[in-house]
Amino acid sequence: MSVIEASGLTKTYGELNAVDGISFEVAPGESFGLLGPNGAGKSTTMRMIGGTSLRTSGSLTVLGLDPELNGPEVRAHLGVIPQQDNLDTELKVRENLILYGRYFGLSHAFLKRKADELLEFAQLTEKADEKVDNLSGGMKRRLTIARGLVNEPKILLLDEPTTGLDPQARHILWDRLFRLKEEGVTLIVTTHFMDEAEQLCDRLIVMDHGKIVAEGSPASLIKEYATREVLEMRFGSERNASVVSQLEGIGARIEVLPDRVLLYTPDGEGALERVAHVGLRPVTSLVRRSSLEDVFLRLTGRSLID
Amino acid sequence: MKGLAAVYSGNVQAVIERGFRVIGNQNWAIILSGFFEPVFYLLSMGLGLGGLVGVVTGPGGQPITYAAYIAPALLATSAMNGAIYDSTWNVFFKMRFARLYQAMLSTSLGPLDVAAGEIFMALFRGLLYAIGFLGVMGIMGLTTSWWSLAMVPVALLIAMGFASLGMAVTSYFTTFQQMDLINVALLPMFLFSATLFPIEVYPVAVQWFVMAMPLWHGVELMRALSAGIFTDATAVHLSYFVVMTVSGVAFTTRRLRALFLR
Image 1 (cartoon, rainbow over the protein chains, first blue to last red):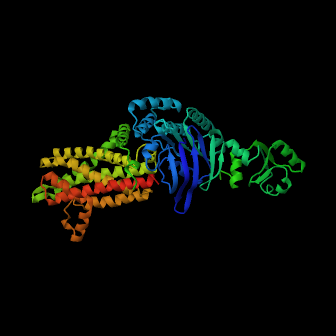
Image 2 (image 1 turned 120 degrees about the vertical axis):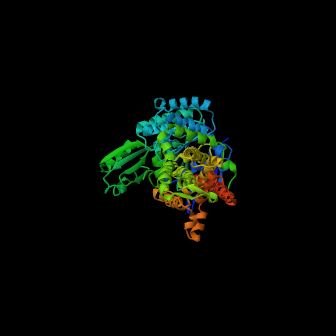
């Protein structure tokens, strides 16, 4: 049975359809991604799952319950990691975990043990009695995630989990999230980072303007909407557009961005040789594997990060 | 309005527990400062100004000292100010900057649990101040009736009225400039609600306006209790705050719902 079932889910703010009739299901233990640019409707969808945003129409069940009618009961099984940390700065690190657990009605005896375990998990044991304000950005994020685990949730909602973190902090966080996944926690992740989606998600939906534009595993989406490799070339901003006619026929598809030309092809090195053959000399060139970024570009004609 | 299950989980105690933990982490000097404000007013105005004013007419027409005249009014004002501070500035900060309520409402707590818990904490602070101030009044010999002990629960009732309404009003504010409007409303109310002199000095129309304001009812209630002299109006004053509290709590819950369950 699915842990989340959405059908025709719609949220309207005045004239704007923030979420426009989306349908999806999430299986237990699955790691499910909502991918799209800012304003695509990802966070609104997350809030509706948590019952803190009321849907305009459509149906939604979380663990078999309607989050709108049984908000507290549904949230008892959810761990919510908001986009911006909202730790309690008037409490110390450990107290943040304990009191948050109290909001779920959990006992002090349970929380004492759980807090120690989560501090360990978040690598914050030495910081237990620090003020929250004294933590670094990465530590705050880890504490926020640890806090979201205090009620041993069946579903963890992560809204842009690593936005604003440096690469090292991101990798630590991803490692922690992998462990949760291994323990069987269902992860729902919104992100506008392609590498994050590829790292974390078994399956994802690509959203744009409140609608689902594609659905599948990262690998299958890349296979379906992009070629195996991409040749990125820079000819200088004036020339990028004008060289396109000469590149025709070399790759499967060409995308011209303001700063570079992308050439989709199964064999990047081979394509680069052929580019040299027709007499073009790119200022820089790079062969890489296709990513979800390319899928998004193909589907919407825009890149993810404006 | 959806069912109660969507807004209330019966776990107000967790919100209160947090409040006490925060007090435990705080500097006690800051908490005590709230107690001294009305005491300073009482000393400067009651004793200082009171020396110039002499004896005035108290409840039931009996002569009392000026300090005994204003002390109950200062207690009512202190209950108002404490409750307003906790339910406006404190709530404003937690709502707009600390995003505490957003965090609380992503747990099993509902908006009603949060509102009730926060109002309780505002009342707890008010309780401490009211007991302290009543003690000072007792020491200064400004109470003439055992009824004055009832000023403590009545201070809580006044605080509850202001706190519940204050929280709802704060929910509309998004900037610090708007928050300043609260002081614009409170200061004149303190100065003109029969706190420092009787309202009979005003034209009748102004008197009616003052009598529509909540603080006037609080002042009259406290003054009656300090002397132990009651009239039919006392019941009206009490009812005023009961109605204010009930509608304030309903209003606040609605607003929290509108803000956090969009």
